[in-house]
Length: 266
Length: 283
Image 1 (cartoon, rainbow over the protein chains, first blue to last red):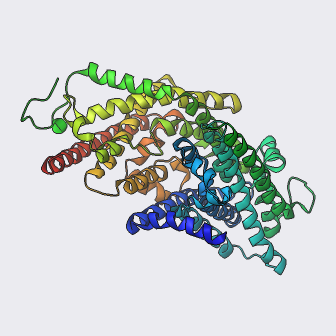
Image 2 (image 1 turned 45 degrees about the vertical axis):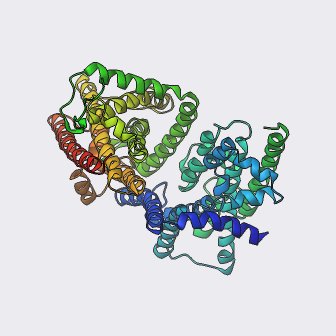
Image 3 (image 1 turned 60 degrees about the vertical axis):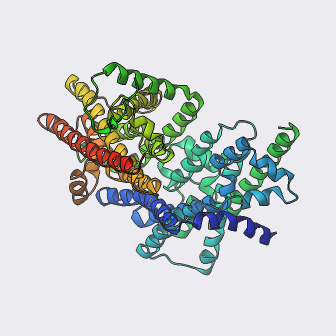
């Protein structure tokens, strides 16, 4: 199965790499676009000192982690990108996937891998590296092992949001713009410490769409900060449950959508 | 009206005095934009949500200083700023405008150039129509929503309201000239789209969209003010909030006007060069 996946994405990759210079400019542009936001934040922090009590290094830790994970997800889940997928449905190319004797989900993952989005992930790595350099965090083996778990869980979380967005296209092809609030809005929101937001926003992103459990709470653990919101002490360790839970629910929803689509005989 | 045989393409000629034609173009563009209703509603929600996030970040930045002023801005000003900038995104097509570039790449531009209307004003009129529609369906609703959720500030004097109208028009014109010039790069470059993307990012970075220019370090402010980018957003913001008052107000408008003239001249130059290239190639 892995071999089939790799072959599928290699088609997309090769066509993207056809114009090397063009691709390089695109990737650099994507890095630049993301960096511009962080540079501006850092510049403002020289005047304000902290945001919600968190200094530059601490914000960079959170920000970098979210950007790394989102950027990675953006590439891996390109096939499920609601904006892209709505076109697939409209053009009828998705129907071909249903006819082929291979796993639908595998084909979805293999249908696209937008490499230029590497730029956003690269920016995340740079910002995260900056945070590690500025802060002198006491790393324990436990923390070192948990960090990649948090990263993968966050990729799964955002991926789940993409899958939900793609699935909504089975009902209404235009709903994908609304999903942007959760994917792009969510990633922006989670890049900053949760306690700066209003109560209802915090509660929503902890209990309904549990993004805060994936980055903010683990960050409190890594940075050794107390929880200002008073949740149980095991909360920072719920990341894998939240991330893969959201992904599982998303795929369940996806299956419902596929069944509905296939049965209406479009 | 068909162009006569042997008549050169009209890209460089003086503007036709047929204002009714340009007004009609603007009105059609406005109606076209208003027709996309669903995209407008969910886009509005997304826009509003991002505004909300940015407001909270600014509140958190102010922190203990919430009762005072930073760089001339009160916290109410800063919150209003986020609403204003969100409202302006669609108005000045902050995140990209591809219509002209597309027409060059498909070759449609040749027929655009042979119309009896001036090419620059043809596109400018349509952009103004589009922008007016966006102000109606995105800009004003966002400001209205902000007025309900937050306590926003309003322009302090009637003079400021008048200045606001002027600065909005100039900001749009400057933004249009920039987008026009960048789009024309498609006459020369294969990868004009890549250039375009960089160009739009530059606007986001240097216009004062992400943070009020006044909040940035002095050296950054100095660099930015040597460019025309702050004239697209930051000037509008500072007029609205009354940060620009007294003699500084007409001064800023005059600076904006100067940039508008410079960019217009540049646009004419680039267009003439582009048309020459097209004619030489037998377009």
